Length: 222
Image 1 (cartoon, rainbow, N blue to C red):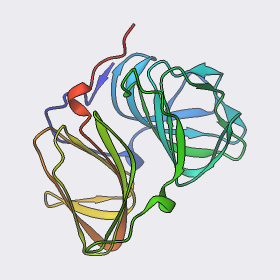
Image 2: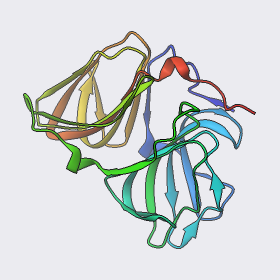
Image 3: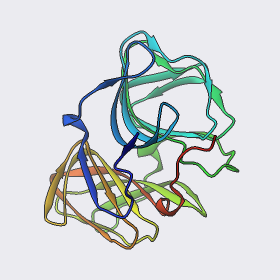
């Protein structure tokens, strides 16, 4: 399956208007944003766990990165409330689920295969002092990508000129980018060579941003 697999074009998806699709596990549904591959795929998705649901134990052959958007995600390693950012690199494993139900934004098979750095962070606790109305936390940085989280005050402008493509999830609030209003739940991907200029709406915005990664995008290895 190929979905939004042309990384040379700008893509905007309203995840809150995208159809939920059942996963192989009862009670776990997905809204697919981009995907290369079948059930094992390089994928970006919104995933919803119904209360008392869980996925079977599995190993992250290609790595897993996620943000908890709502509720509490759980596995044998602990509880992860909304606002938590997690990186589970290749070779890690767990049995994920949620007793109360949760929603996460998750990226699969998008790690460098030599990455072994596993961690969790509360994103808001990582924020630096604001500059010109923008407070940013660097959640992860390596030679292949940079991942950040930003609070943008109403009317403030966040600009990103990183090379290698730019990906944005509007976690809360709204922005205007390229004269297009983008509200909560919007997922934006800009191709390599484009600049992000995002102006926050009247209630500000909370943004997750990944840059530099698109030149390395490919289908999962066998």
